[in-house]
Length: 476
Ligand code: G6P
Image 1 (cartoon, rainbow, N blue to C red):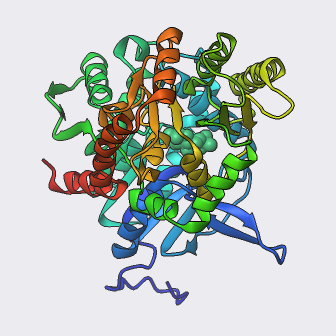
Image 2: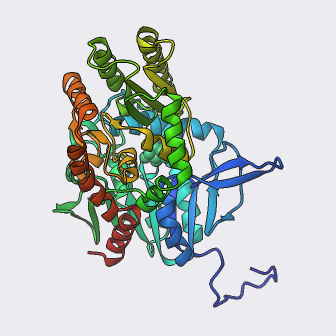
Image 3: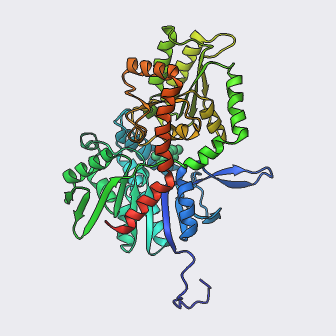
């Protein structure tokens, strides 16, 4: 507004008022250093931003989130077709809200208490403060009647704070991780406040029907509301909850897999490994939910028993660094790296390695080359909201070859029914399925892959976002 001193109401829409706002803990950009030494932003890999970018461009949209640097205050800025609105977090808030409540309380609680969740009142206070700040940032930037889409477990109180500040908005929320069964959720000291936070939304999306029904059961138990099928009535308002399984940008991954450079890189990877008959691949954030230890145990027993031999097979395990200041993640890294060291020490030869372990993250093109190089993809998560890696692997298999070993405890198992489905806790069963994948015939592999490819070609991330947003708009 011009600094005229008068506050004349203009009919022109204020440039800060956006019709569509996405809110997530992190902004969809990473800071990179250019060749000239200056900082710049690069769009983060991941389907969410690919799916929502076009919606943003069309509908005067903005993205609200943390830019990843503790203690740094940044003004809103434009990137590609998006307007990005950074939310500041102090170093202490990163520790209490992000590493603490989000990743050492909620994350383990929502993933079957695989690691014990910690409950600290100071963490909860910081979670509330930070969620309020995110809600305020949205409330100040949203146009009258705008659509706001809040993403994931870090921001479960944002719908309520936002509704209080701006009852005119249409608010959606999507939980990317599982929602736990009542018996586990019940442990949370702030179980009612958190549910009330979510119930500020008009539509709540979950990955699996089971997540939605877990949530509805918790509401029925802890909130004074009426629950009928997928509808919750609280006072005058109705809130809907349902399953909207997320997917990937299938076209982008397929296109990368079709480029000669990526295909050549895939061949190079196999050559560099000494051309083993079979390449097994695991790709995960280094997280205790991913079942990396179970996978390594099964693999090492197969080597021990001589059912697999080094030279014939190699397991590539990409474990991208994650949440490294959280204790349970540090412990996991030590355990995984100790195990890999033991396996390689026992089974490696001068020429060949059993496990090629890579504690790195890679650009998408390199990931696609790895998928192409792999005969068998191993997804052995103990609990996973979706698992997009499984879908990405399938998206690269244009020749309908390769085999996917997939944990039934992932959301992806609902859609990729023709994978070799496993229970990662059953090590013998896992070993048999790994052998079945190594030995699968071309015709059997093609039969399964064709059906799985049809699924993800039909259901990509764009369709996911359209279905969620049209359900939010339609109010039914
Ligand atoms: C999961 C969560 C996301 C999170 C991502 C990476 O996929 O659902 O919300 O952004 O992990 O974790 P980080 O803690 O690095 O943001």
